[in-house]
Length: 443
Image (cartoon, rainbow, N blue to C red; front, side, top):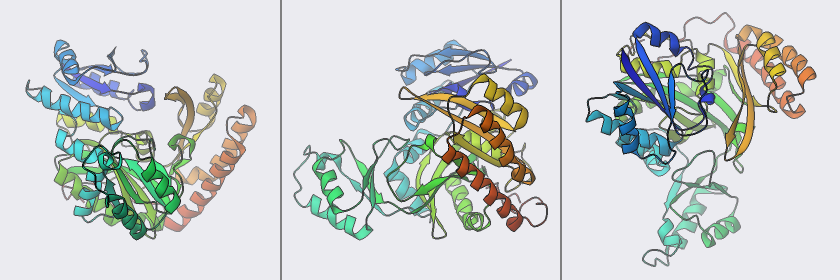
């Protein structure tokens, strides 16, 4: 029996319900699986195998020792955020010395994608678009280096060239942590008087729509999942889990994305991506501007799976088993299902019971970030059923009052737009799309 370890750094419940189906794969392939995690708790129904909690401060060597003691034959990284994905990349390198493979990017690739400035340079080199920006040296700004009196003048000159508003973003971190909105010269002067204690990217704040796409694969073969739309941009950043997210057909935006998707696959080949990445973008003026690439699964992975039907976690396992991409010889439909995620009050058992009976519920759950509780619901349906979904949701909300009125209105408006977009995009039932998903050239 083959022993496969899974590494996780945040609450495993955020993967629900897409780890549970791996139980059948484990049984069919004779796999004994064990989850090694450093945050939250893992109950008997949260992972289809054993589990062990590690010290959150565990070093890469500590984790390797744990996996060797368990006699792991292989490993899979499903860790979030970037600093933990880098940890897992180092673990992969150390496990390789013992002949143990791991589904994870190399240390070099993970570093290039985890650092926002290096990512900007990388995407520009591959003919992709990114907001104009400059790398600000935190040592100079904080007086820890050789005095450079003209440096502030250079920064102010570049800012005028880019045009306001701007965003100041730490090279690392996620969930908008550390980002400062720079609306004009006065905000820039305040930033330079009280700079971030480290290097940051100062870039143009673009007006448009935030979106992301997950790409999964290895060895030259990569699948591009459906686009996930996350709300308007152009002002101060908002917290990701307080926004409506959705995946649905949008003919013009989808057409704009085709060439970008092809270049992203080429980028994955060049970087030798092995696993999953999430590309964050702003869509505006017919272009997709890449703002970061996360070298890992993400908070949008559940939505990607719900929209496409392609289970990212199973794909990672297939990479270890040598069945990737033979398990996906044909093309995916460009848009398979309508999927949306929205914030709710912490769900009751009664709400979850009724939602499972009346909706195609993917997940309704609460999770913790920095000690605060957030709750969300993910639902999906066939495009032909979008027109009836609104009535079902309103009926459910009238009984359980789990949605703010403004969010219910936003969701209802989205479903109306989606129904109209479906008719505009697919006047007849959609066939297999001509959307290439494999970088190896399969069509």
